[in-house]
Image 1 (cartoon, rainbow over the protein chains, first blue to last red):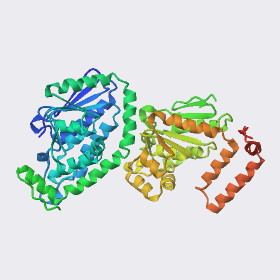
Image 2: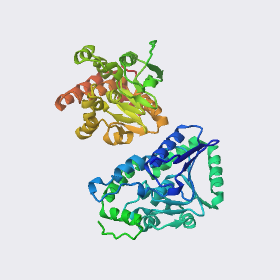
Image 3: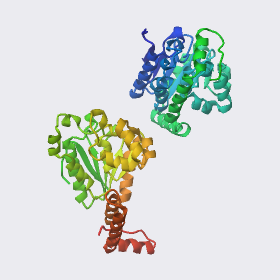
Image 4: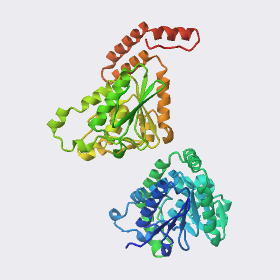
Length: 265
Length: 259
């Protein structure tokens, strides 16, 4: 099934807005959305007239991460999808581009940011969030490991103690908690989210883009010098987790809306 | 120097010569014409006493993306042998002055081999090196299997040559294929600065040093050591040796004349 306009790309004066647009699925990532996001980021990088970027979600959610209903699950382990490959093809190029693009990128988080959706917000340069926004590193709930850079970006954003807690307990945190953890730049009323984010984008777009870009390059070098290796490593680990019995059970329980019974294998 | 070229640009700056590969539309694919012009320019710098080191570069996007495949797709074993295109490459190898490759973007196939024919490689962060010939049914033909292997070792070379997959500047640095990696805006300047530093050194010693280092690849170490020693002795008949040692003892900077 292909949907129309799973991603909207809008050019404004000096900046652009990328809107993930699968509102009935809380903008969960299917193949199409991830590839369109990759293309949109490439286009935003190439276009010199775009000097700042806003990423947001349509409807109630920001992005609920991988669309689990989109995956083909089977009891036959040979037929199970390779999560490592999926990450290498779909998610890692997005994270690399977000970090490498030498333009400021603002996540305007309008609602739930879960799993890879939360990781996406973490990889951006600014996080302006609505009071209704929530963040959850939901991966371990279904027996997976955090990916899309979360394992090394989140600890650097908020410190290991809380980052590890978020990743292991997979509990939702609200906007106020996120602010007190220094996970976000600013919390605003829902109707003020886009005006705030666009104001910031317009302001950044008038700034010294080259200096901003070089600053980002320096910060990347300082904080994420091994970006590619770490993303590649996450892909290996997700491949391992994806072959586990717990992952099969976790997804089954999720779809059947019941508590999973994990064996630890 | 009053040579005019179609596929390259040449210039001089202080005591260095700069050759820029300039076929942007084809990412500096190494056509016969380009290789011919390149070797002419290099030899001309090699014979020019005012030039003491050479920088060879491409563009930010591509040092050189490979051979010109269009030119060779219809060749036969005999026709390509008779054309003897690699004779030009041997002439690049025989340049006596140090050549610094300033590499950004693609250095693939012949581009990677050309960089490896140089004496020092400065890479931009966007540089990538590879020998993708396997993907079009051939193997490297301008030294790739030999120079890459000596440079990065058997295992890494095998992987690169058998899969055709390129490596990043960072990987190339770790593998010992490049001297250093700098931001893309700076790679050419870095190479020029290094070339100018070498240009200040006594040219005869630079020449004999390059010769001796390259000898490593051709002869057993016993012969290489002998060769080194002879070059060492030879320099004692140069003015620059007298000046260099005198200046050292008098604790002043030396002034070299190239004699």
